[in-house]
Image (cartoon, rainbow, N blue to C red; front, side, top):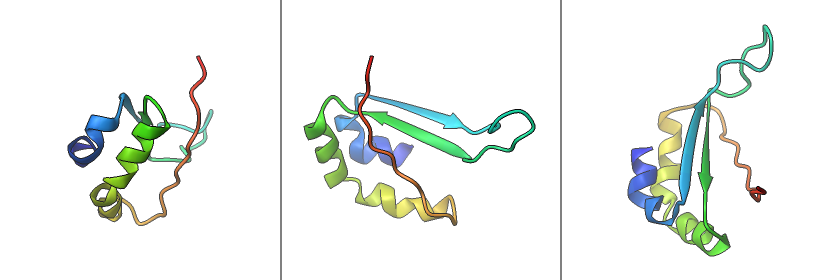
Length: 76
C-alpha cells in the first residue's frame, strides 16, 4: 500500500484494506485480501489510473494469480 500512497494517494479519498478470513461458515476465503479505494469522482479515478503503472507492476510480487478489479459507484 506504500506504492499506492506514493503514486496514487493524492487522488484517493479513502482506502480500506480487508484481509479475507472466511467465505462463510467452514468455508475458506475466496480472496486473500481486498483493497477498496474511494475516489471523489470519475476525474480523480482517471487521474489515479494514469499514474498507477508502478502499483500494477508490483502486484506479481505478492501473488501468482491474476488480480480482479471491480469498478463501482458508492451509494449512501
